[in-house]
Image (cartoon, rainbow, N blue to C red; front, side, top):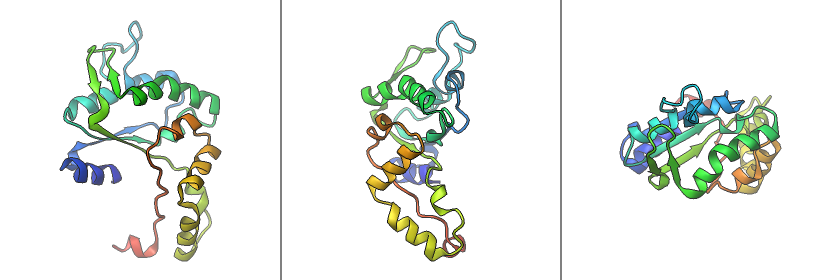
Length: 178
């Protein structure tokens, strides 16, 4: 819903949001489904989810990298390796060149939103709205969120590439009635 709200506010339409699931990406082959397989590999002629998002919204949009912090599972070395290979240069250079179409896309037209469940442990076992809200208030500043991400194995190099980080306010009984 956050990606759709951003797309509506920034691009005028909820349809300008694409959600790409990273939650089950554990190995390099899983990334190929998202970013296209290299030439010579099975599926090398198939457009991946990321390029399809760029094709669907050629004038820009929101691309949600859903559950990005789950990449590589609990293995921080694998996580760093996969994120470095597929994301760092692309984010730094602001472009993506397809191995399928050879087209280079300008990523400056897009807003990237990386999501994760990294903060959920903070709220386990809390039964009252007051407790959840107080915990959220104590943990929502940028440095505490960075500590939380690092503690969950998110590489420092990825955290440094984030323009902003937000700990979403937890659901409360009052908000669920709305």
